[in-house]
Amino acid sequence: MKESYKLVESLNKNRLKPLIDSKKLLFSPLYSEALSFAIEQFLTHKNLTCLETLINVFEDRQYKLFAAHWVEERLGLKCSAKAESYKLSRTDALPNDKLSLKVSLELFAKNGFKSKESPQPSAGKPGSGKAGRKGAKRVDMLDSWARLPGCYGTGKRQ
View 1 (cartoon, rainbow, N blue to C red):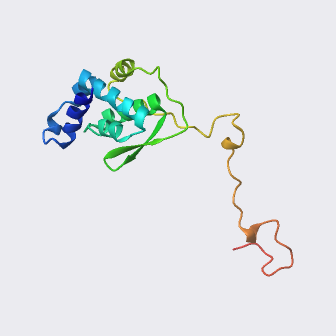
View 2: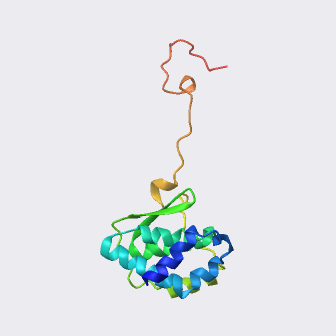
């Protein structure tokens, strides 16, 4: 398994990296063995660099996103994108040991190699309480009912 990781890691330094098909690499047993090694490294030593290397080996954004989201769900980590690389950080989320790479890859292929975007919470749902309310209409203080009569400029603004 360590040999698989070393081979995949060497792709980052190789000049031929743009010529390698990302889809074939992701579906290869070599990548899954390297990922298992990196997961073992994380579980025993809390070392995130192996996982980050395996995520950043891809040139295509969709494959990077898939790998990052799978590692996030599998180990309960948080992933953030900085420039062209992805960084992982620990969270309080529980790891999902039952998440299978093979099943996730099949779903990824069914989606046309597009990663599922997380749904954004919408504020305008009916019955959502304060989240759906619009703010009060803004009223100029010179035109306001709260202005005391008899003050300077008691008439309406012109």
